[in-house]
Amino acid sequence: MTNPATTQQSGAIPTQPGPRGGAESMESAQPADATAPKPGDTAAAPGDAVIAWANGAVIPGAGPSGTPGSRPTVKLREADPGDPPRYAPEWLELREPADADARAHDLLDPLRIRLANLPGKSGVAIHDLGCGTGSMGRWLAPRLDGAQHWVLHDRDPYLLHFAAVASPRSAADGSRVSVETRRGDVARLTPDALKGANLVTASALLDVLTRDEIDALAAACAGAGCPALLTLSVAGRVELTPSHPLDAEIVQAFNEHQRRDGLLGPDAVTAAAEAFSEHGATVRLHPSPWRLGPEQAALTEQWLRGWVGAAVEERPDLRDRADAYLAERLAACAAGQLRVIVHHTDLLALSRPVGGAS
Image (cartoon, one colour):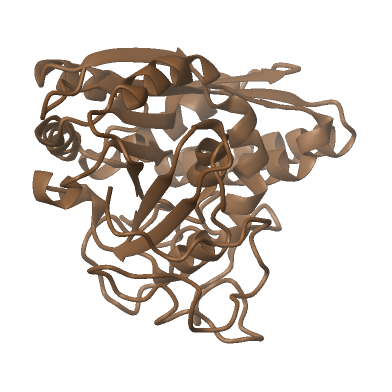
């Protein structure tokens, strides 16, 4: 297990970052609050344009970035340091309950068995890739026994700050949970970056990677001999009730938007399963759909605006029909008459262990 770091206070993501100093321990990392906003700043970075679609604001990350050729994702690749974050903490907080409900619990038992069989185990080192505000840690840490040390990776120091201050304090059995943050490009991981890792996790990450990057991730996990739990990758299927004649066209255009610039989008889980298998891992897949009804109206509204907006960004010829479609869907959502299933897939890859683990 890596060196322990200061245990974090568990709880809701704060509206504003807490005071500097003592919030997180950083080993080989830039302090997560080094460029964090100061009290009174809004969640979006200075100069971040508000994205509008059909007279409604879209939280950054819920829809298209507004910059031609760019994508509404965490900064996975080198970019201008002045670029604003592409995932707003508000969007990640809004989707967190739906993510938690969707993740596949059936994959946890084989993962627990692997972790319980670690040789000379004194704790588990978990690397969370593209951690965002740390929702994976808040979901998984209380479901695993034993001491845990989480290493949170992200390009965005703002999100790393949120992840650190809102990380859980204890495991399922009351054991200590500690955390450190590492700012860096999760698309370029090497086996050395995962040295000492017992588990790699990620949420909503695979679909914003290229095939080469997924191959590199699988190779890095195989080199470290550690399992990977990669959740909530888009599956390319959406079901809306009641149905609408334009549903299929919007789905198709959105999926093509997800495949821009060589990214895999809805093809990512299949590519990842193949890549991990080629590196000798045993791979298990399980559906993890969002099920959105009247109780999730705020999330559904934001998702709708972003989903339709991305489809129109991909296919501008849809705009006139999409305006009317979105207005109709938003009205049904506000009236509590719309239900949506957004299909995702969770993947557990049990790489061949190294060092005598079973």
